[in-house]
Image (cartoon, rainbow, N blue to C red; front, side):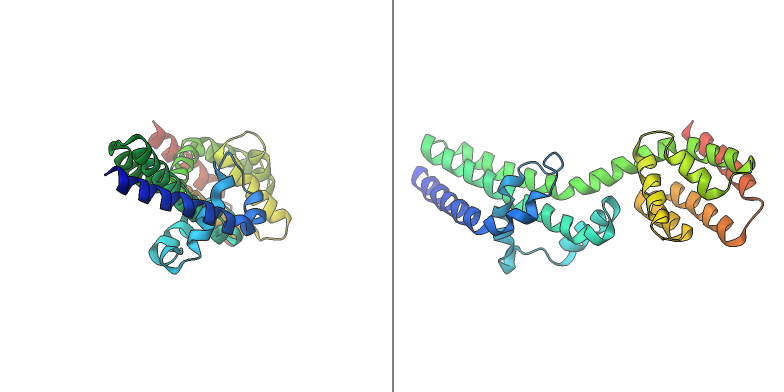
Length: 246
């Protein structure tokens, strides 16, 4: 068992060095990635090099899964970039865990280490692959918690005579938090020429929340119809949101 572990460990170690060398061409692509958000980015070249092989390339349902989550977390035009980075991270961590496990098993003549390496590879691969899904879910929960206050403030400001766009900007800059960050993105989009309807619709989609999509729908309806009853609709929705929160 020791010989087998040494052979596999040596092969994985050699491949690690080769793939790390091949992946140097992706250094510029990786450099701009936030190291806090993507720990271990210095080694992602390994994953990029593996992904060049057809069998390990990002495709099919795996790609669609990552793209869907990336579009919610980041600007949609950068979704493929972040999906690719995530896949490189997954492949990198799987390789590192397997390599460490088999090398230790061979050197220390203890087969338990290769089992640990295989388990660690599976767990790390799953964790980094599903991390965006968890981030989207966490952000959605954080947004929903703040939603009743947002709706109440919007109803109050519009009822006082403030136009929707000004009310939106005022609320967006009033606090810090996930939903306020998304609202600031809407303000930025509108300042850069995007229509109010498109920007608010994007806000609803990125929140990945049925409640927030409903809120966005009410605002869009008010914009389209110029409804004088928008404040009343928002007040009603606010009551429903507070009841739900309680």
